[in-house]
Image (cartoon, rainbow, N blue to C red):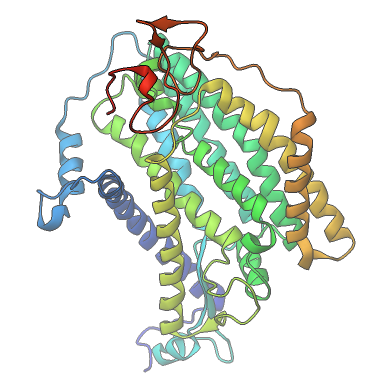
Length: 440
């Protein structure tokens, strides 16, 4: 097919057009995905708690996210007296914008050969090969870029708490900021373990390295666990969701926000979850790879059907990780703040440092294929050192109570009506010496 225009597109221009189109498409896919991720979480939590969940708005409740969005847009936009209006309005943007910016370096598929299509359109350069990559921006420091953009989110948290003119919001902002900054350290160290083994900062090259060998989740399982836990902390998700500790700080740094400004905070949270899950899939799950153990895998270059299959695999992995994040929220209780900070500074940071040093030794001696042994060795070392480390004095001491099976008063310390005042065992039918007490 001859082109009516005297136009010739170089391979670089075609790649740029694909990049722009992919960014435009994925922004809308992730935005819609975030809206329905909220519904997924409500359905998942209902299933875990033996409830029904939203099922009234639309068939099977599928229009519930749209109804929620309309509700937020129509709610009163209330601004408390004395707020710093400029920063008060900017804070939600500082949460959402970095999450939207970060995903552009995520590779969603391999490479597709468009040479025949370009020549058929008559806009190709003679002798040129048009093989384009399915990534928004294929930059060689994509990992550094993604870390830099995600780190900006802490400004939105701190600004939201400070500009609200509310002491509880201010304390919540300080607490959430300290959490995010603290967990960036072990996250970066776990990420360096992957970069050190791959020898590159390019997400695309890291996927190619896993396609030719094993997933990093197989080779570096301990780094994967640390990195995923830090992702939860960075997104303020359970068990690190101190912003939602209602009994302590009302609603944390976003207490004074309403209407769409309030919705933007949670949109940013879900954007962070989706982008973080995609980042985890790239780093530890081989991207669009389907074989975690050997180099036999899907080819990198192919036609439209292969690209569609690779994108589907990548989206399936992201959905799986998002669902795991939601399941954790409805399974584990949140930490106290002192426990949360101690986990980072006394637990994850030392372990990730040991892991990085171990990986450096394996890489130096050219034994990258045995990195899994290093993870097992570090885990065993931590287990052996734990008994000789100083025990931490709990901030909240247990109070012995009559009838408690976990920290009871002894029989000699207290009696009630000439019978023991504590539960003597865990049987459904109590000991006869305890007399007539409820067995429920």
